[in-house]
Image: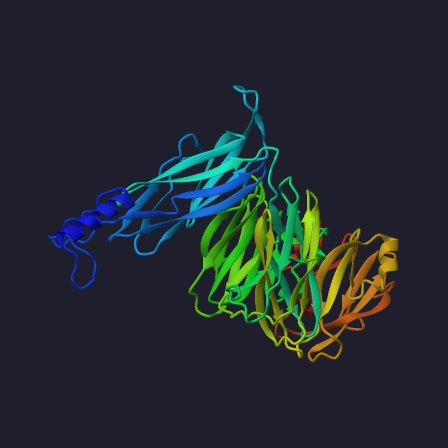
Length: 562
């Protein structure tokens, strides 16, 4: 028995580089935890794997990620900390540390080459600044160091009460001769709500961040028999293609009932960008947890998160360059309705969307997703691909899967999600807003009014709200008038104007049906009036999109819309 224990101790010393106190003492006969002769449990033992990470070639402006797994192979709390790697400068002078018990922890590394190239005074050659971000849980530190072109091997030392470990990572500074690097954006695509039997498409960008030619191919899911399960939780994107390039952001149609914004929100490639005074976002959801996706940008501000009116945390939205981030706001919630509130302050931050946990996702049938084109060769240009959705033969429900992109410059997976609605779902009417010097034109058929919009120079502000089809119970026609002298459009569900003097106004018909009292899923359409010009403005924003500061005063509720 002693000889066998001695051999075990010998291998433990070789494996962990330290002496385990239990060596030379008896193990529990029932297979339980080993104890010393005095009855004490084994002390903590730190294990780190892998011992070395190879990041491969990294060229200017490129980056890559990997991670170490930290485990406690002994008993009791293991307190560990990361020593500052030699030669690296730390941004904030913080020290990364943590506590391990039964649950392992990941030490995530993001190594990236910055775009600046500095001339080396010693060799009159080029050196390349690198940034290393090390994260574990919600904590992180950022370090920097410059390297010449070539192969480099760096070490990280972890100290703990369960022994010290030294791990390594290597990479090659590619300089001007960078290998091809696959970059696909966005990595999450949400089709929203689509009726059965319909086709839809979304555009994504595929780029080569390297210098050599990139050869790639896309593989679509093979149907319900595929081994990989669907992604966990329902991803919902706040992106609205109709908002791209317009002055203010408005939620995509299928989120009109659940996503509300007030204060200053503008468009950033279709996403809501907090910009202006007191931007606040409310998202109503039903589930057991929620994760927020946001984009950090140079000079970005902070996001303050509340769940069901309770403060959760404040997130830093600033980064050296544009960087996608996420934060798990809550888990293990009572399955039911909740409200996530995002308040932005001290700068601009892009909010991408959320992932709601609780709803069960399923894989679609074979052929429900396609990519056009599905393969190609890319040098330095951007290629735009279409992800095509076909809901034929799909039953109502929530669907999600991944499209895999393989190449000689890496791999990427694009998550695709959609809700297939019941065929009996009410077909709402989209109403778009156009503006011209204080005149606001709301129309449900902009194509039919193209000549008028173009001739007068109206600017498209995007999707404003949704009305109901004619004859929907609880609704009536929403009428439109125009006064050429004032340059003002007026709207009312009352065909006589609801007490509004209509002298000089020309009737232009109905733009859809509006609810005259609150019905399920509706919200107020507020009317504002500007006495100085006798013009009107309509919005679903309770704050009037800042109308009060532009000389408007609140003029009542015009009706209830989606």
